[in-house]
Image 1 (tube, rainbow, N blue to C red):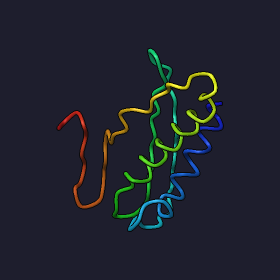
Image 2: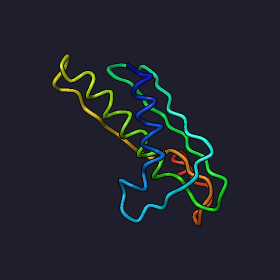
Image 3: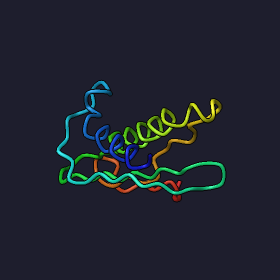
Image 4: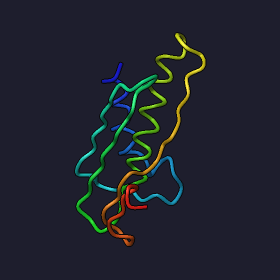
Length: 105
């Protein structure tokens, strides 16, 4: 199940420009989607990289969102009350805003 969600997330990151208006098509150099089982759920962490002067946070957030939706789709028959929560950017490096971390906010 998680391998399917990982592939869905990677594919989504590469297609973010088709899903989000005004989002540029980027030649990503890395996309990773990782999962950790936590109490009452699964934590999804994504990483996107690019060799250019722009950020790739929309691609990472899209990857996490679609990976979560994929898990939801596969598990909805078992539990109709599944929730997708707390999708947020943890860290960004590059682009106009420079290096930013949630821990520093």
